[in-house]
Amino acid sequence: MNLSEFDSKINEISLVIKKEFDFKRILYISINKNKESLITLFPEMVLNGQPLELFELNYQNLKRNSYVVDLAINRFMREFRIEWIRNKESDNEILKITKNILKPFVNQIKGKEIGGYTEVIFFNAYLDFLIEQNEDLLPLLSSYYQDTPSPKNEYFGLILANCHQQKDRDSDAIKILDNIEPTSQNALNLKLYCANKIEDKEILFETVNQKISLYENIGINEFEDILRSLRLLNEFNVLSRFQLENFKQKVCQSPDVYEFINLYYRILLNPEKKESPEAINGLKDSFAQNNKWILSYFVEVYFKTENYAECISSFEDQTSESRTPYDINYYIFALYRIGTQNLKLLEWLKHWRDNLGYDSRFTRIELDKRAIINDWKGCLEICSLGIENELHEDYLLHYAIATYHLNDKEASNLQKELF
Image 1 (cartoon, rainbow, N blue to C red):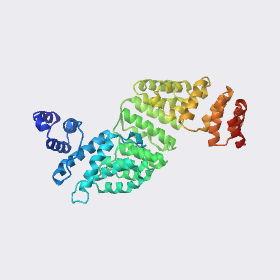
Image 2: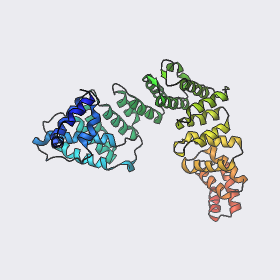
Image 3: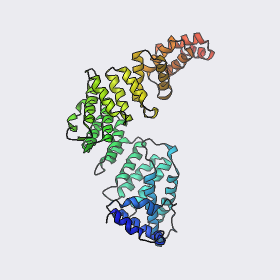
């Protein structure tokens, strides 16, 4: 039965029957077993946006409550955002609602000879971990995961691995991800994140190759993923081992996609080699209007090819939300190299200092620039930050000079302590 026929049959059923709980439960079971795209009817016909509540906890209501639990888990999987970096502020009502349904149900079936609910028990333990953030729960969670039927549910494997990496057990997370069969881009993305965290360049290199081998065609999403992967390989000094020939068998969305991948690869490997400015500009015109994300890579390409004006222009064409520390790094150095936009340079040096942490390269540039314009208060702030991180003579000298000009009693006392 196709979707149209299914929809037609459903419409023949009276509204009274459609509202019956047991009808919805049977419909839900049928949809879950069907391999067609009938699931598109699922939210309207089954969930209907209504609050979920358990029936009285007894054996007669077991099937009904099992259905409610399934709905709760499915709703949670759709509505709760899984984050690699745990943000407690993201906890929302759906987490509490789901826990309030699963906990009493699991308590009802535990210790009884009722099989078939290992996944519910695992998911209930997962919710405990999300709420408590207790690392001691991980062995129990892993044990419940092993009890679930094989082949393992990919989603469950991903959330178990994610729980481990959130507690910096990245090697354990990688082992879990390696056992997900068949592997998927979701599993490999998380594995790549873990490899990056523990700075394991061999696993990182292997994972990038796995990811790219799964691509059949290279559309815009794959294109972005490939550029991100090349940047990461270069950061770990393993890009030279990567075979660009791997892409020749792939079908690209357009010739320009393959051309830019080649260009970016060449520039990362050998930035001293001259590239045609016209070719780079042509590729930017081809992509940037409809794909603002790619401006990050043009910021880098223009900087590495010493076209600082275009580097600055590409950065300023980005939205503030899309700018990465990579982009800001190149933008600051481009402003420094051209030497004619010092107000912008000082603005972004301060932005880095206030938002992205200590970087001795930037603090020393900013210190020199602020000393030239007699901004002694700014110099004092920079020196204080510098001295907290390293006792370099530049900071000590400028601290003394700034204190002299400001006649700041507090700074003078600190200066005495330092000397």
